[in-house]
Length: 488
Image (cartoon, rainbow, N blue to C red):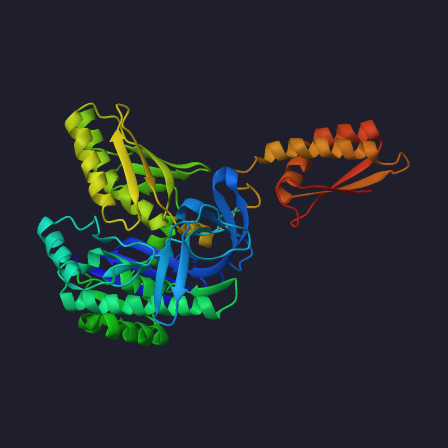
């Protein structure tokens, strides 16, 4: 299997596609005016405390105040002379006006500000440093017992500070003690720099900014199984090359600068795959299809047999379609970055073995997801409930906005319905006009005006007779569906 990372850079947008055998498996997008806040560390000030929910609102210098659960808050004591710090026992009571170091763990959404924690964690290439924790551990995604044991031995040999926690990341599999040691030095130096900023800068201030999407993906996803990393920007190519020279020098030869006149994503047929991310229906090779419908409270996924044509029993057909759908659903959740509560309605299967096999395939496919997922078993109705952690806005939310005509419903009123509503508006408007007015102009959207000119002209004639006024129907392209304007 050929795995590639493709990076497209435009003046107002950076896009990253992770492709396996020419199929899009992950997609990221970032714009200067919509840059992610997740991972940023701020020196903030507690503005208000809401004891009833055990939380505080923290001013971190943004338009919206951050939200911090006090159970996730720590009091940090810093000594810059010897570059040391100490996490004090959590105070019994925080006070308004108190300064605190916090990290963004979830983007602002709607009227809500960013979700915060003071349990800071900073990822490196191979490890994550946790300054407010003393725990040393191995990522749960490293499942091989021998490798876990080897990494645990290496971790104990690194002579790490006792008052700082570290977690070994999945990228550490097969890596040497030297690789891990280099990462620990970098992360400790970075944390000391953050502490120094916290004492020098005013409150509130940004004291550490997470990497942009390009360097973040290079750090987290450019692993040995990636065949090539291709970038169509000379500036970003040089920036990535410098980053890789420091942390991933053995992968330098796999980085390429794309110079062809045909746009990279177009040449690799990625654009058409990106467009399909935004559709609600996903067709499967077997002829079945999936419908994904995000709602206010949850995401609903429905699996259907569609045009499945193979002659087999209902049970076997359901198992075949569900098996393919399980892998595709995991891929779509990743591509769209859908989160929260997710309910999957698989085609009914009566055999326990088939249900277990589909569940195992779904769990296997979800294991490649960087986001944390929690999945329940399959019910007798073949419903699966799961949750997926999402810290950023969805890919769709960056590229689309709510339709002003349907207000997000995905449907608009028919011309006949709008014409009936327009007749009511005209009648109410005529009642309010002076009796001396002999003529009135009614401005309507073209389709509605055409309907009143033709199919409903008898209703206009009836209104003219009732109110003894001439009614002029005028089509206006400036009006949207449901709008009208009456001028006497």
